[in-house]
Image (cartoon, rainbow, N blue to C red):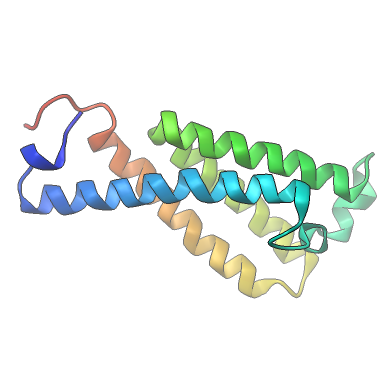
Length: 137
């Protein structure tokens, strides 16, 4: 794996950006996922599109707890396999964006999640360079 000490200046900056993104996309999904069970940070059910509760055979609360489990798993994937985890988080965020657009009234959250998804894509792309590399070229 490449480290900050064996890279040039721009490589060191890219490596630091990779570390920040990996930390953020490990921690934030895990914390948000845990909070799906407690609702201490947000009342997550309110973000669920009514259409979802009409078509799915279970309660909104059950769906949000399932989402919490998915988010915890996504954070763990980022921690251990950041190249895949970045894409998992990005796709998950795109699904959340679709839900928020269908729910209407949460366009600001959808825009924020789109920005976050770009960060997750950046993590996946940077991971191609830093998560498997043994020595600098």
